Length: 110
Image 1 (cartoon, rainbow, N blue to C red):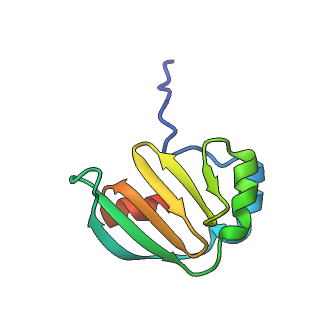
Image 2 (cartoon, helix red, strand yellow):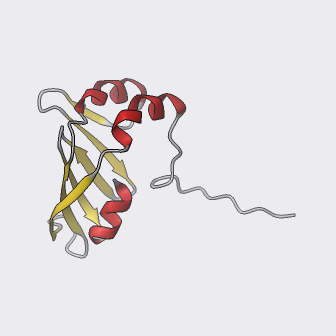
């Protein structure tokens, strides 16, 4: 029996247990997309702004400590994640995304 192996984990990486536990209180928070604009880096894509129902920043330092691929900026209280070609930056109550394929793609990233 042959099995296919999916090698692209950019948008499908399972959360590590400790990340899921740390983010547990924040995973159920709702985001509302407030702006959809043309992406300045790639005119075929969009940049999106979404607002979060609650402050998600308390988890930022922890994520920085266990996920080496994120960029934590304590001076501005944000974390940036690159997922494939997409760039997602999270602030306490706002998420900004670049190089996404519209609002549906952005919702999937959140």
